[in-house]
Image 1 (tube, rainbow, N blue to C red):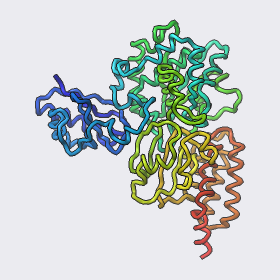
Image 2: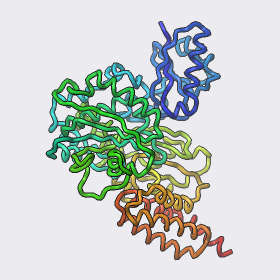
Image 3: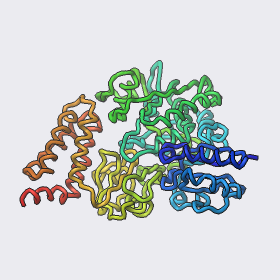
Length: 517
């Protein structure tokens, strides 16, 4: 009987030596003449413990971490003692406070199963949602997703059920389901973790969406910077097809649906749904004017459901457990759970899935452990590079779409980036304008020109030149960007700039003081 170990193949673990750890364990096993079965699972998202190695024992899986390749021989000896003592032994991973406090609906299997085993996926509850969807039929699928309260987990939080209903009601010879996996926000990695650690979940979610709206083809648009995710999907799709999850008779139904992967070139603007569609059609990624909406005229001019990975990956749970089971979590109009990504200068970085309603302060100080540097936290940016900067005085804000909007912020894809008191918010505001200028598709004037002028004006502020007049000019530029841009790239750039000015005026005033001396 062989000894089974789990060593993550997730990119975050590979970046800190997971491949080398797996190879070292294999070598140590050969020396000891031990039959070893190493499963390259996904990451559980507790990044401080990567590379996290788990040993399958009679009492369950026992974790050890973080493990370096040089520790492999001693670790293997401990593993042979059925999860025996070792300096890096952490016990059962699910008992760790960081994991025990979570409500894992979307990430229930991530880090636990073999990502490329359809049998493992089924044994852990996979395909139940698809089977129920086939039994319910299209209209009932749409109703379940609508009743669950699921909203898009990428930007403005648009209700997913409305998108499905709009496409389902459209009359067209061809319909599509497009997965936006162009995860480009700073501090975000949840999409990548699903694609690498539980790819069948995404495929199942897309298949259910296809059944709901009458689409027969789906595309997963993945950013080129995600080679591990691309490889995982390319291996998972043929397996799903062979298992009847995709193909001519999806889930044993009379409906056909298939999926293929398309790789983007890494332009941030292609995270915007219409620019993504342009790229998917083989053109330069530029934003389309709306209307028409993609649900009416999307990919190749046909009705198209376009959602990101987390939105589509939430659908199987809703169909398997029922809309009420999902809707029971959350607060207000923000229902279900949100996979929150803790990053930046934070002690306990990683993936934390929880119901909406947890406060920003709980996430940063309690769950995240504060700044890794040990210095006070000065600012937190939620929602990517175009998210607002919140000071500690706003840490009572619940993680909720409306609560953030009421304080001129946005949740976006759920990335939380922490900064300690050494950060200069004037330079961060300048970075937002520069980022917009570099990443703009160039189609609309406010974004293309306004961001360049904004960076120039902020340079003048930083150099201490006519600070008050230039701050007024920046505010005017932000007003133009917000109201005049075609898409959220230009429209959201004012969030970090204006929040920095509002909450951290001392960082701008310091330049004025220095100039006066």
